[in-house]
Length: 242
Length: 244
Ligand SMILES: Nc1ncnc2c1ncn2[C@@H]1O[C@H](COP(=O)(O)OP(=O)(O)OP(=O)(O)O)[C@@H](O)[C@H]1O
Ligand SMILES: [Mg+2]
Image (cartoon, rainbow over all chains, first blue to last red; front, top):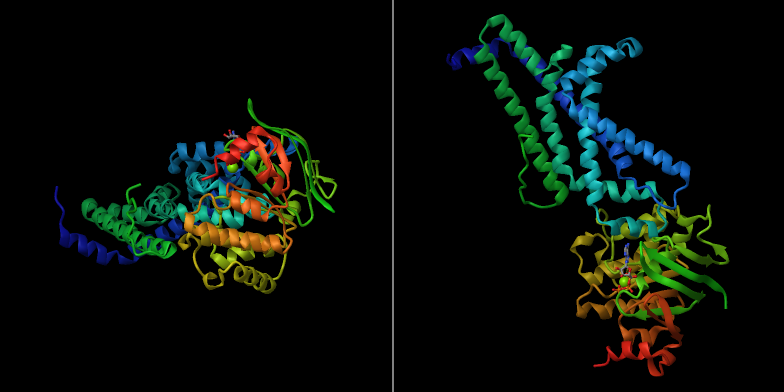
């Protein structure tokens, strides 16, 4: 067993269009999953961070409690099961109801899955902002939602930017699980190429290199944005292997 | 004179800890009321109850004869009229100096961006922070932060400002600049409740002084009465601790 580099290169050149198609789909799923996952995470993390207060009326207390239970179950299930299982399970479960194709289902699944991780990131970001920020906002007459949107969330997002960005890198890699829905992302395309040329080592070597390039670009871009956000030149370490 | 805030038999417990044990205060328009007292006597808790950052255990608080603890009372509108200035400034870290003074006006008072900007700049000028309007709040000194916090409160055109030890987190050389701003407000007739450990300042600025001890008002009087002829033994002991 050995790796023939020139064979690998010719596989890359001969199958360039297929690889490129895989790369573009992987990028699409990673970005859509991260952006919509963040939106879901903002809503769920926001709900999770709402405190039940003594002064609330009973109906508000009950609604808040339902919100807490729903988000906890959502996070528990989607973080505790493989995305591969989620993909096939929800695709077939909802197929007759919503009549979706596998590609659309894949976009929903990766967003929903990322949302579970983002919810935890957002919640801890919210809880790490100083209570004084909330009190100052309230003292000026801000309502709870205004406080959350204008004061707390901007700080929570900024503080948890490294973890949020890390989800993009995770999604570049984990979108490969959506091959179970026959989505032609990079791993699926690599499998088809390897299946026809039988050069497994060389083909997967190329796809590994391509993944590494994608994650590196994402890493560099995220670092750039993080530095801009912090207005500093300090390079912060970001964990690439989540 | 017109009564703005009236506190009646206010009590606050934290679990088994009795922090306020029945406090009565009436605040009149244009009055500067200072609250002094030893650490843990319940001064902050009292102010926080007035701004509804803490829910009183029992008692009543009236704002222009309206019960602020009643169901359905518009708490947010009340708070936009009665602002708090905190010991730790609590400027919004995600906004620059100017936006700290604008956001409450546009989001709560629904003023236009232009009007809010004008008012913010007027108040930042007043506290001597006009040159810093674009600065990040994290880059300011403590004294500068507190002056911005005062400008932020003033920009809401409040009826009352509550100060909770506004200079206690400051280096000594910055205390003066903040006290100066508060004195200016006092001379303009702003209605204020000020919790402070700065006795000379309290003596100078107060229309009325309350000495709190262990959750109750132990003594109340004019600045002259409290500082020059305290009747209560605890007041005397407390003030003796400040004499050089
Ligand atoms: N949220 C809270 N939960 C429990 N105990 C509290 C809480 N807030 C205040 N206390 C307690 O209530 C008592 C009075 O506190 P408070 O902050 O009102 O005193 P203070 O007069 O402002 O003191 P200082 O001069 O140190 O600021 C203290 O014993 C404090 O530990
Ligand atoms: Mg205090």
